[in-house]
Image 1: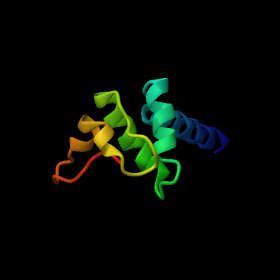
Image 2: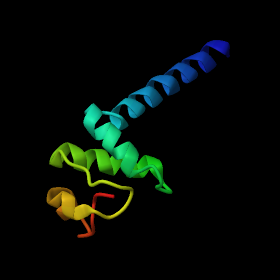
Image 3: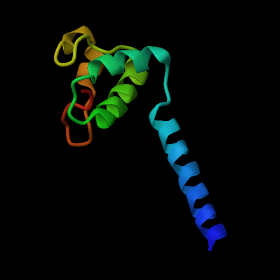
Length: 88
């Protein structure tokens, strides 16, 4: 019983660490810029994920926590599959 519990716990730990690593992948530039951009977001995890994707493709993140997308046209113009803005 203890061995099975330990095995399940170990599997959960490995899976959660690999998911965390994927979500935090990226450059220090993108991490710092997205942290500022998403600092006031209601869903910070989601904001950081999409900001990181957009920053990785555009190498640019608008200043501030909202708006200013004119500073980075690539970031501004990126759309999701539904045609709405992808980047926060």
